[in-house]
Length: 236
Image (cartoon, rainbow, N blue to C red; front, side, top):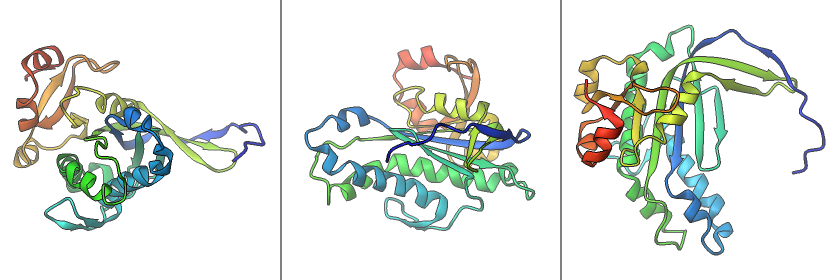
């Protein structure tokens, strides 16, 4: 597609609202992209991985999960953007208080955690049609809550900016040994987190968000090597 016109600019920015940002990143995507003849399979691979994430949101067959079928989440994102090796999704709070509802956020993080934990099953399904044995072996998720600003272009398209989007983008790159990490700004009760096996810890070296309290899985943390534990985290 050829771009024939200049960018017309943004016509307005709506007042700040509460939002939630989810970023996912396919680990090792660059090496995968460099394989011979990958262009024959690239779109199918990307589409199928995105489809698994969107089943979490919109509902559908979750073949990698014991649940087997997910119901749609109670709220849908207002923005979706392809990032080259993953996606960004943004939710905005509603009059019904979507972002402040614990059940919505717990369902979202549990489904995402389960997906990254069972990514080998997704690869097995992908290998039915993609003849490459060493597909990227993991997907990483970062989630944060906070202020967003909606920017509307002259043509009506909507984009979002805000600290929670920046934070989610930092989280997804933090600690190579952990594939799911959320900011504690989701404001979830400790009892709900403990029930699902998560706990809070300080991320010491998160760029622009140093000493951010984050939520990770207890077993994941135990599997981080001692040097990275000392360098990247501080227990509360």
